[in-house]
Length: 192
Image (cartoon, rainbow, N blue to C red):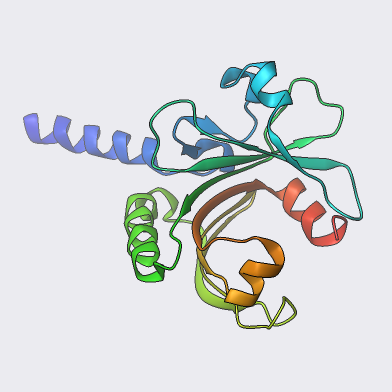
């Protein structure tokens, strides 16, 4: 009898922890579809660093430093223009690893080990992306993607060339990004 109960508990628990929807995934308690107001007050939001996109103002990004101890140095939230509830459509956690790409990759692998069991049914791919059209063309990202019907998770380390760092004020960093399909479509087809 105890063995049957234990088996049922394991089966029930394992079905609960496998994420099927992008909003099931959290970065330090925050999820896609949440209101940014649940985590930060309007004063912090209004004073956040803003990033706009050249071809569309449907979304904009807000860069905010965590208000409590965090494994990330800052967060980036994508929200819709004129949405005063600040619903999150894209959420990124960023950790700086300036000139420490091997440490970045170790950190990336530790995060992947944490989340791999959550996305057993999703499409996963690992690859490198060279930014051929950026500055001197020598910057690179080491990327792992998890694709779900409702969105995607991208985990990557950026190693920027010295030319790119000078031109665009970039720092080598780890990034974990959670995006809705709507936001991914916009960033790929409208933002640039």
